[in-house]
Length: 158
Image (spheres, rainbow, N blue to C red):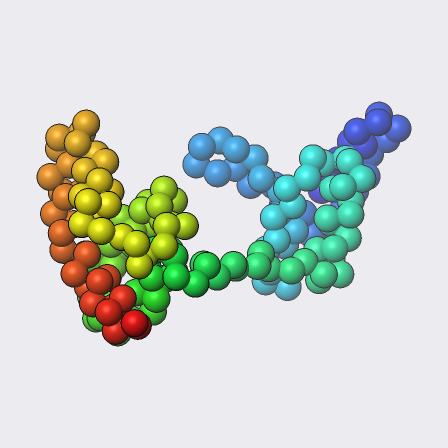
């Protein structure tokens, strides 16, 4: 693939680069070699782009580090619930729906210490979507279904 250098001094030709357009029309550049596909996020033609290309070529690209949630937080409890056998026994669709619900909960309240969660807090978290009546009934029922299993997991731990 050929790129124009940003400062206008010429062009460069780099092997193993593929340009793809996603469903939203965004153009993405990938380094593709030996079955691996690594996205290069830097602007083509810049020094950063060349550095990212060289790192991908040499195999020095590390996978993004996954951080574990803080012990004792609501996010941590939810993370443990995802690891539990009771969550694993749920159908694929139920796991998908609960994960979406609980991940949204983590975005807003994940740092909250789960030992301090009271019924009032659960009601507040559950009633967030009351402005959207159609979604509210479904969300309320899902919270009601999910909370007992989460709290049983908390009791098992402590």
